[in-house]
Amino acid sequence: MHVSRPKRPAAAVPAALALLLTVLVGCQGGTGTSPGGTAPPTSATGRGHVLAVKIDNVAAARPQSGLDKADLVYVEQVEAGLSRMMAVYSSRLPSTVGPVRSARETDLELLRQFDRPTLAFSGAQSKLLPVIAAAPLNPLTPDRDPDAFFRAGDRAAPHNLYLRPGRAPHATAGGNAAEDLGLRFAAAVPGGRPSAGRTVRYPATSLAFTWSAGEGRWLVSMDGTPARTADGARLRAADVVVQYVTVRPSAYRDKWGSMSPYTETVGSGDALVLRDGKEYAARWSRPSAGATTSFTAPDGGRMTFASGQVWFVLAQR
Image (cartoon, rainbow, N blue to C red; front, side, top):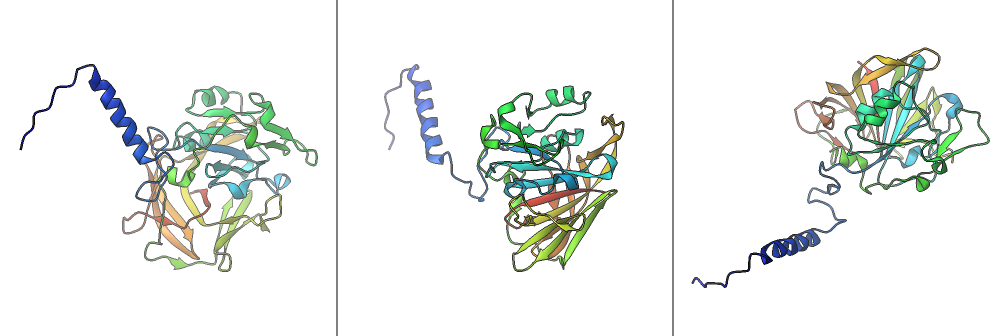
């Protein structure tokens, strides 16, 4: 049966729509999760705000502080065949992170996967500074925010600069940065082969990941020595992704004149995923700088990951 209703005044329509939207948003909940178990979108792109910190990785910088609290750890090649790390935080923040070192061009492309992240770094090559300023990120340096950084008295410069995230003008989204990238934490895909560990070698350094069945984690070693935090805890990864990429000279040099390598993370290639004591062949793909990196199994299905910290080791093809 049709029942006629009195017409609303035209001026009341926008107010009614606004009320309806408010109710719908309230029903969704501001801190819940989506049906798939991932964090809700925190921006128009669905990727949350994260804190990325550039961390030193030479012998004089070890043991590092705060690495164990990162959601993601990227390892990339720098000058003289050495490596540096970029730790990405969102779900939890340590009290101290470091030693903090300078940024590279590679970092800018990697961080395009997130929605305007904060990048903490000590500085950069002078010609790169305008590029960083124009990048879609929030730079956090000792010059801009001196209260967020301090120099440790028990180490020599430049390996003694540390960040206090609690004093930084930054608020994380609270969700896991790995979910912001679209990584799926779920049961392992079929296949894989048992693996006791894997070593990745750069021209002048190496990282090794050894499976510990007792801990259910990959134990990290650097240059043949067990890697630990400043508190003495062993660095452990739930998943390790060895992503085979092109590493080529960039347009920048360090202050000693050495060419800075540039790691290409847009494109596609092979990868090796370590999880649960097995290694899985995979493919990675990132069609543009504004896209996230996807990982697929040999059958074309989506690669899954064990819950916990994920390390991405960017290795030469």
